[in-house]
Image (tube, rainbow, N blue to C red; front, side, top):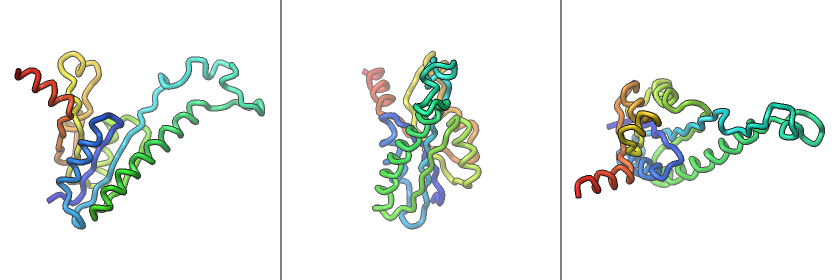
Length: 169
């Protein structure tokens, strides 16, 4: 039995399958789950005009305005609302559930948080990128498997299953 289960979620269509699978391995009233989401905020998410002295950088009072921080805060709040909805679903099933939304790189952050929290299991999804796309896009699940401080359960996404079913026919 796993007592502390970290569930790493992204905003993909696969997230609900990962969450539901995690609920299936939890022992109500005996296990605790931590829903974890990362907002990976990079400069590519910011307008190219920010920071060069344009109107993008000035608010109505004439002070410089940090658009990237405002967009980041909106993304974090939206993610927290989503995680709260999932946590409420778990709590209705008598599952002790907490959630966190962090800003940073999920590859590094998932394992670090699992270690800090002393997780027994990490549940993570797999989208099924293959061949060259996985090489360029990377694979969070692959990184977590190779760097996690505990056991990892990888949930196959529906896109992965569809791809494998097509290959079999």
